[in-house]
Length: 198
Image (cartoon, rainbow, N blue to C red; front, side, top):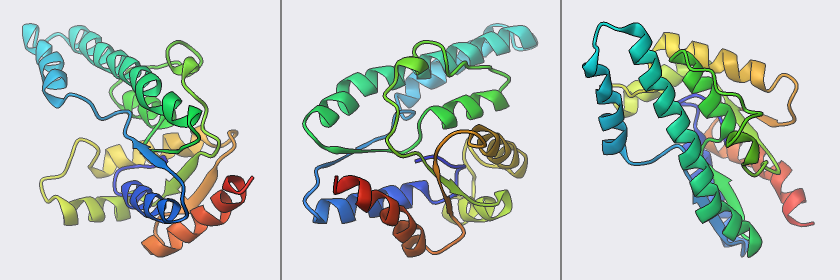
């Protein structure tokens, strides 16, 4: 599952988990980019060692981005691969496209063809939940007036444009996230049901 904040990814993950579980599938949800917030704050705090040095800030951000790549690899080994081996359906709330495009905003270039990203399992279906940045921003403000790391019109516009470029030549299912949650879920299930019955 991929898309900008406020696109409805997490709502779709919950809906898919509920429906697929009710049909007898074991569903394992993974959030590969969610990890120890305190540790991340500590890493980011290293900027204070040279607060006026842009190159140092870039090094710190690059380290945080690479660290997250290895967290994703660890979660793939600890959660994703064992689940797939026992025949479970794995639903990931974000994956490689999200991390690479997100880090680009901070000036960090991550190569999806380099380790460890190139070693991660390739999804059977990549679902891109697409919404305009202004709609995503309104949704974010409605749920959290203080905003979040992934909010703000400029960031959301940048993130969406990079995702559109990412999926320009990659196979994926693009869903209109401006539809109702039920409509988005129906769109996802129309593709997934055929694959899961094989």
